[in-house]
Image (cartoon, rainbow, N blue to C red):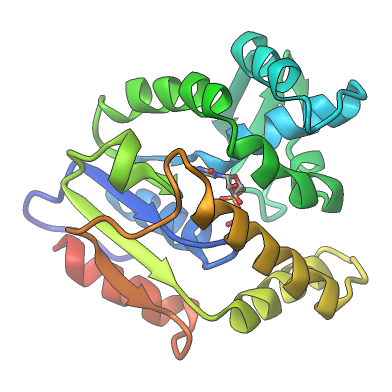
Length: 229
Ligand code: CDP
């Protein structure tokens, strides 16, 4: 593992579109710094999973928002090395892999566009992030949740490259995905995330934009480390 000298930034925000490698890079960076890693997407996924599980209509904004205000979401360090970056619990039940499923993927951006859902979840995210010594990953961390972050990175790549990575991740977990379907969901999620009224996906004015199309995970990590040092 790379050692970090001098005083690294305390609050590090990594934003970017679906499957741009934010979680992989964020987790590695947090481990190298001895920081907490917090993937905020898991909170939106947990609410989406819970709504689907309860048979709530995803388009029923009021009911989904009430759920986000009441649900108890907990994140804990990964209890297993099966590719997860953390354990995810909702109302005491472990749902880590359920939140990565196809159905959640297809519906999470609808849920994440609701102003009340964002208010409930981003308040919790901000409270945790302000403690510092944290790498926080999402869509609006540098713009809305923690605009005071010491370092902001916007990780980008083409939709095709991101879909290819997500495809390989699913294959590595024994799945038999369809590339075109994954690409379609990635494009649709990006469209909803970047055109919503509240906290749309965009790079903060003071973010460092990293295009990872031509870079593998190690090369992206080296660039990120250079920004931290
Ligand atoms: O891992 P991946 O990049 O595919 O997605 P994620 O980070 O788990 O986020 C899932 C969804 O949650 C996104 O497509 C957004 O709709 C939403 N999200 C958000 O709106 N704001 C955040 N800070 C994090 C996620």
